[in-house]
Image 1 (cartoon, rainbow over the protein chains, first blue to last red):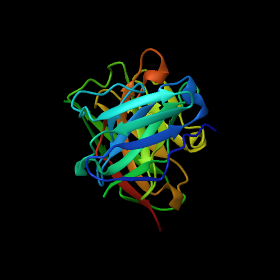
Image 2 (cartoon, each protein chain N blue to C red):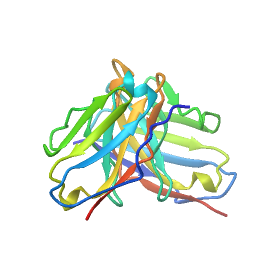
Image 3 (tube, each protein chain N blue to C red):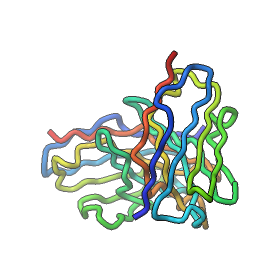
Image 4 (cartoon, each protein chain N blue to C red):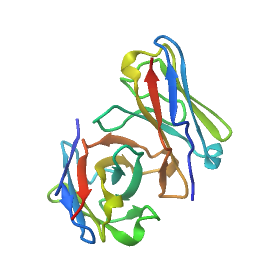
Length: 107
Length: 123
């Protein structure tokens, strides 16, 4: 079965840059999406199609892709960015897969 | 702004059927979108369960396909999930969500979510 692999946790100080990776074989050919989930809330998409940012998402959120790895970058991290982040992609037609999630801690 | 609202029992006994409904407000359920169920066990990650289109077309997670069915009632603007023969491992927050339904599936992502409902499986 298709899997997306993320680091369990990332820690950064306020104002620094947070980098969260997601790896999976299909990412070389399929787009990736990133969701932010705060405690007790539903996920919200922060990056779509590898590097597009939905309206209302701060410019400090960006995405990139290289081969089988996609990366979510948060520049100038703020305390409010502390959350769980999930990558998501699609395997065969009609099978959506999420990464295991990365807990971002703002020190 | 479209709204999704999950409803259903918060407690289900082992071996029984978990049944949930999602109400769609302020958006046409017959628009070119799929309507999906996603779950999240306590303290764990997200798992896509399945998606349904207003024509009745469905996609199911292969790992759950043998135990699930989804349906839609366009007249009441609702879609539903049945998960059969549940065990404690099915305890989770269940979210309903929306994703596009036209073009290349790799561009389909979940752009609207309900608030989620916790379902516990316990005797």
